[in-house]
Length: 321
Ligand code: A3D
Image 1 (cartoon, helix red, strand yellow):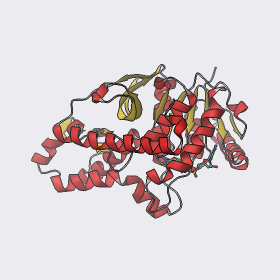
Image 2 (tube, protein in one colour):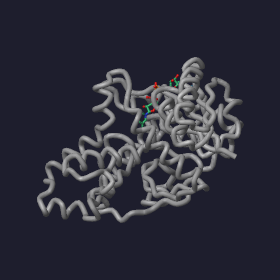
Image 3 (spheres, rainbow, N blue to C red):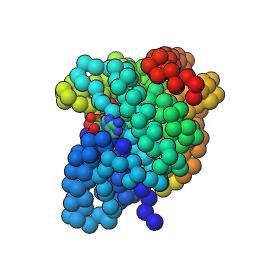
Image 4 (tube, protein in one colour):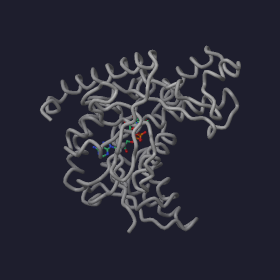
């Protein structure tokens, strides 16, 4: 039997997710939004696209959680995106309320689902979602690290003129300006990045510029769009996580996952490498960090913890969970 993926939020990312899922024939899709017309219109439009190439999946738009019942995977993008000049943290108050409603909607209807959250500010929203639903921590995860890593990889590939496929890298930490591109775990055609610096293929200054551009990657797009944020790359990244779960690929992917002791951190969601298979997050991989990476990860963790405290102030319910 085909799997069922429900997408909560049928906006820019939700619609793109739905389109990608049908093209890949990954699962049947339910596209949910409180704006019922948008969900129904996009579902109908995408459904009509399936007959061009003969993609054999069903897609339905709805504003009724009953239709999402017994989903295998739920991907959440419900919420407001940034406008130019806003930070992700500015979205906290509004999106926390929305995520509480979403948690109410999915917790009885799809208690066994693997839930991927994309709504910002990511690390804190995914942590709140886990608390509101009470789902086990290995089944609730946030998408950000794949996107941040793919931005870093793309900028590097443009700079050194090497195809993205030949670059391996990882960006860890919170999904914000404090994210940590892991230069010591970056290789180009199998060679460590340091070697490329020695060989003068890239300068330290250029690398710093690329790291900064990666950190501000979302802002660069929202400045151009003015009324929204990136959606093609975020949706593509979310699909990689859903696919690894559905097909039990056990890929190691940088995700906002729950950590309880790893990296010396307890009881927090933050970007770390996680193995995703059909048991959800099956393992957190602990990388050896150099002193700069360690210090940067600590700064990033501090920022996530502080924002979660701000979330508790907005909704004291979060403290008791
Ligand atoms: P957008 O196109 O505005 O879509 C959001 C959708 O959510 C809209 O269609 C709303 O109607 C819907 N919605 C609002 N409230 C509810 C609710 N209570 N229940 C169900 N649906 C609701 O935004 P988008 O798709 O561009 O972005 C969605 C979210 O993803 C935003 O919070 C962005 O900041 C975030 N985002 C995260 C990343 C990461 O890498 C983590 C990247 C890009 C965007």
